Amino acid sequence: MGKRGPKPKGKVKIAWSPQFAYAIGLLVSDGNLSPDGRHINFTTTDVELIELFQSSLAIIATVTVKRRGAGEVKKCYAVQFGDVLFYNFLLQVGLTPKKSKTIGIIDVPPKYFFDFLRGVFDGDGSTHSYFDKRWKNSFMFYTIFASASEDFIEWLRSQINQTLALHGHVTRAQGHSVIQLKYAKTESLVLLQKMYQNQELPSLTRKRLKIDAMLRIIGESL
Image (cartoon, rainbow, N blue to C red):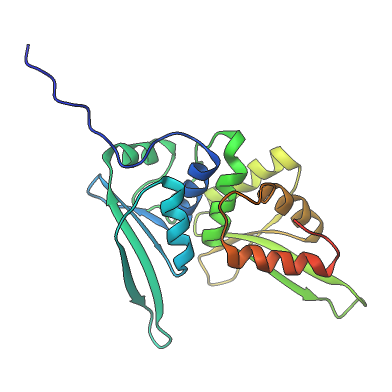
């Protein structure tokens, strides 16, 4: 019998942790699997997310700068690296090439779901707040997750409901492909406290500070 060659080694250590789950959430939002079966791409307009992505996976990859859009051109940052083992793992948990409209259930251990959700939020989520003119001193705010895949949005909603008994509501603007899962003020408070229960774990500073400012208005904090 011939000798077997050495087992392939990957750049990414495949082991679930809060940081690893957060990075998977970022990939679900802003990542892409190349059709070549080995390369993983992550592109974002926020340079801090590039740093958080790499540190969460404990990798170092070359960062390239791209410019997108007509008129007001946006600067984008991207990393790409080859790792067949990690690529195959991502396929197993539910990511696919050209995933935007087809992604559905992601096989995340329940223990790390809210770290994963924080990654999804930092990639494709947002908050929206305003004073409702109909009622004096009525400050409204929403926590929002967006995706082009209805299956993924419904899966997120079901996971959050099973864990926290929150319902949210799903909307789709007429003529737009993006679907939004929204949580209003009372449910947002519960959800955000869970997502940010450990301030030492990775999160996008810009979004966290916006949430802090929003909560201070109603005398709450993370």
